[in-house]
Image (cartoon, rainbow, N blue to C red; front, top):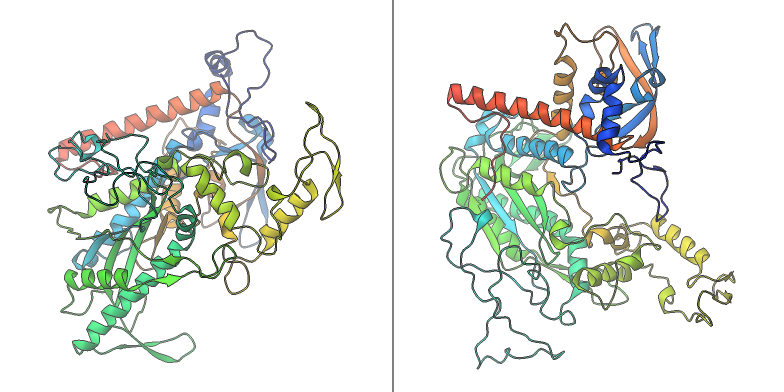
Length: 600
């Protein structure tokens, strides 16, 4: 059994071991033995309370340093504590990773925060007025266009009760009539039809019927510019709504800017919140909540209802008009001087959201659906990697490989520095004259004599230049970001974004949770005096201020036994809280608090 302690947490070189227990003199040292050793120590319960805030985390962050208690008014030092006097000589902090495959516990916290954030923008609460429940709101799904034929599962009529466990009979994947001119073979002599009825979870879903016919370059470029496409679509929808307001005789609203100038704005505005999802074919599509608001001239930041006469149908028409209208072409690229067209796909779903708890699309259903995708990344495509560089790109990119390997190769190839005359992979190299020996050769660019297949000096210099190259289209290469986001198959945007006025922020929810944890056990008599937890360094009251000079000490638990004990204690605490909420809800005949509804 291995721990989650990194051997060299600051190292970035490939091949560094990340899971290695500290060496033990005992033969047969296991997780159970390590946990038993920890539990026998006299300060075990103090250690368990010390790591409680990060106990459920898979790979917690360890911080070391000094904590100073200062009087804010005079600056007088009241107390000084160092982490050397604490258990494990460190403060444990949860990693906070949103990806469920990296840390399930932190991802669950992120998912619940996302649910509360998204739902508050529909029904109010947490600082958002309850009047937003009467605002027109639409659940929109924008998809990517087709870049080639892929295997899919299509069910025209569902008879199942739960879509998650759908066992309905699917239609043939890509059936063609014998008289259809597209039937038979493609230009590369591969089958252009598929009569299989794919089951749910089939690994072939999302894979092209012909890899050579599929436009991998266009897809990664679309992923890169999809955020700009969404931004332009939002602007086009707002222009359409402003045009409707002018047609209906609703005057524009005058706002006073901080500089004292007066400007006129439309009386309606769009407040969206969206989540990006990677499909099985590795193309991004967006799920969005679009809410229609009005404008208050006295307080521009206030959330007010739209002018009378605007309905959810107007919002649907505006989004549909914007999706069909917006289309643009990317800047020129050496591989494609005319650029790539960036448009939405044909599939566009727009459903009104009801906040009364009735109907097919409710506020809880939509918030739970979007919060679920906020914790996912590239797992559905089968690809798992961290940020790629010149050393690791060869392990994943292959121009003749499978679908994902070709997408990563397209990211790296299109995102290359424009001034590179010839890629290093295409330069002549000396062949191995004998097994295990390579002759020295001279790099034609820098003159370095090396035995490596590619010049290490040129690779390091070009990678440094690429990282420092501006990514804005007006000042640099707009495609340079493809290499930075090759591990994300070209998509470099955040997976959950919202308008400033749509709802509260994640920071507000986190601060509220920290404040709750800080005062949760103040009244417990059995709490040991002087005990410091991972959240105590954020404490700040009216009379004292705690200033932490903490530095990064490492990642992970020291042993697998520590991870086992901490995770087990956290799981038992979660189970007790869940049981308590369910019992209370049963007594009050309500829904358990904090429950995130599962999406259909």
